[in-house]
Image (cartoon, rainbow over all chains, first blue to last red; front, side, top):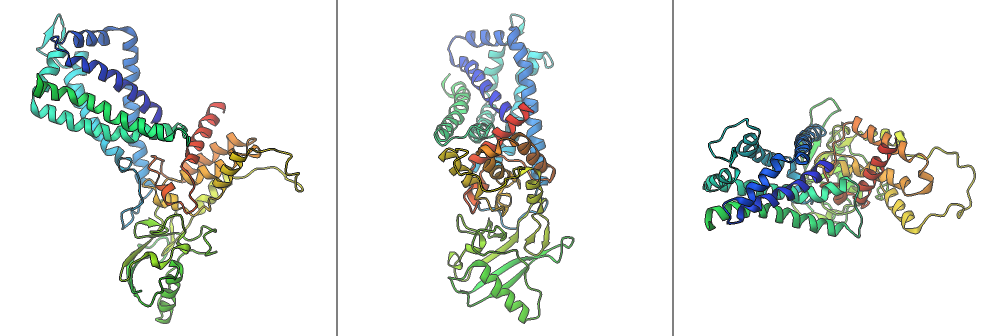
Length: 206
Length: 247
């Protein structure tokens, strides 16, 4: 879980970098170039397979572990546990489930189009025009609102995930614990915020 | 103090239990929680009823036998104490106190509030020891150990195996217990010889017994009466990874 989680967290940074190209007022030139590069480069194609495997494994292992965890306490307590624990640490399976819903929507809107499984009328120079597909989606207030809510859930997921991943990998030291904690919190705020800026830009600024 | 107790009563492992309400009066705030239960049991015996079964032994907070989930917290509302060291002054007069046994698949209820924690012994049997004949007392300085590691090993060895970590964890995971038992050896030179085998066997047994997985919520650390640190869990994870890679 931890290795895959860290891998996916690195991927999020790359994905955000590409998405932020949408904010340039260049008619999508940068974004289209980045999407073209990601869609055609052979190294990226190899990583794409690894990435998909990473997603599937992270989700599957997460579900299996959660089922085992539920089975470990067949008789529940009458009084809900009052022990202090970091708030988000208790709801990882639920925030993860919300992120999975987003992934399915996202795949239907973009990745399956790229793979040619779903057709689109927005085509530019023989390739799907992802800039205009994204723009059309973000112009819909419902889609944008949903996108924002789902990324807030991702932020909650990441807030616990970052420091938990390092703990699972055995990285724990009094000298660095605070640093990992604060970096994780910052990461969990900055990354979702970066993604959220894009629908806000299309809805209110552009 | 006047209190209302809601206690889990269960005839044996196979029976279905239920909560029974007992009013109790004239409890001194200086009474320990277990003494309060003793008073209740005296009252029940005088009334010809079956007394409430609960685990206890030393009543000094060092044996790890008491195992009560009190008002939603293992060992009750005080921090870093076992139930025998919890005093009634931590409760309000007139309060309702709900007492449950530890809940975890590997800790089946024997009767009422007493659970079977043999699962912990089974984990220890897998590797929680050093298999050398020590002979007579060795010269104290023949193996030098740095001060920090000896202190950390001693901190880990403070684990009394009460199971509050499992009881508090939303996943009923035994990672804090196993990590303390692995750490007390992993930090010392004497523990190195069998380190890889030890961690692999103990983790395997923990999983076999049906404990849940650690999701790093740290409820175990928050409820541990001996303040065993989560850093031991990280150490266990390191030891486990190294053992898996080295075979």
